[in-house]
Length: 327
Image 1 (spheres, one colour):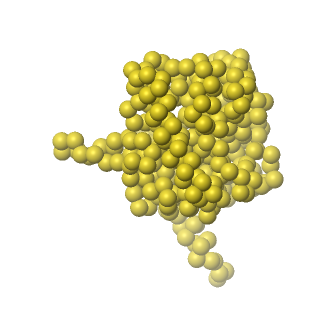
Image 2: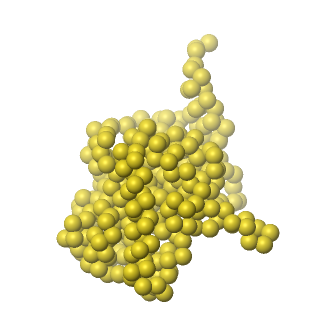
Image 3: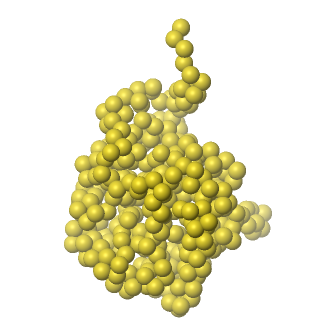
């Protein structure tokens, strides 16, 4: 009997347990890994670029958003290109260049965009990626996937793998990387193991994960380092925010708080980012009460100064951690 390494056996067993064919590795043959592709991957040791998630600035136009972002001290803007975003999908060819022009004129960059793209053949997927790629944008966030409760988890993983294969092909065409954010709850990818099983064998230059340590901590306070290790090759973009569990009545629920005031172990997280050389674009999310900015409101119930003070506090703390770990 042919010998098989323990590492290979464990990996194969995990795929078999999910009901996935060992042939997933055949997908890699269809889309071979090429680490020399010009997909904008940062060089080893390059410092992390920090952007503000533009959902929090839906109350500002492109020029005013860019001006405030510069004042706050960010490197760029993680731009919403989705329904009710800064750029509407149906207007991407006209409005995304305008947004990027205003942002770059202020001395910033659009490192990443946030989309609702789920499949390669949907109406606006091609136009969004074509326009973004032409503007020098290399990374986007995909939409989330819901589990089909009428079928099994392994069947869901197989179905979503097919969607990701299609997206990887479209991304390769335009030289872009699509990252799926692991979001807590009953969404696909919340456990992160299901996401890895759907990605295994695919080229991380084109498809992967936008790793969210806050949501990973929500799902597994002490186990998220395992999933970060699992997804490290696929984590080309990352985002940060904070929370803790709060009991209201007889139920525990998530309470979003400013960065550093919650239970996410950021010192552990940044030490692992350093160890794994994960240094792609980072997006700061502010989901605690912020006058409606946390929900992408077009009008805020707080002043611009109050908004700015809160974000500066988060960014100052974040910059301190990044400096501490030389990231």
